[in-house]
Picture 1 (cartoon, rainbow, N blue to C red):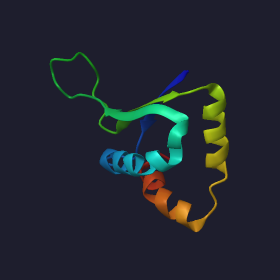
Picture 2: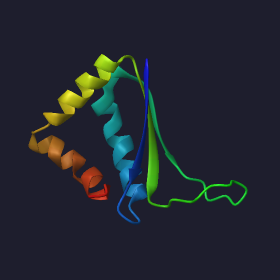
Picture 3: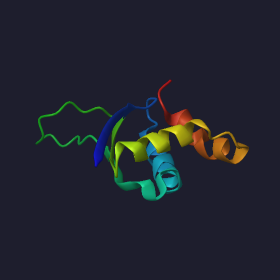
Picture 4: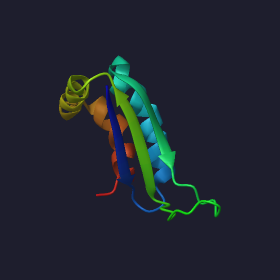
Length: 97
């Protein structure tokens, strides 16, 4: 099993857009090759001793194997249809350039 933790800094004020696009695209993108995935935001609760990063999310993914993750990565590189580009446009716009 492979666990992946990815920190993503979005464009200012676009975290909600990124999270919505991630939740909409993830089931189709991951399929049955991933056991578990979720997206998290920093807490701005003053009881926690952490720096608040309002334009940052953390993605957590749990893959069956490194090969499953590699297959996913390779497939993502080959998304060329206009439908796929259309579905990912809001996600890409929310990403930091």
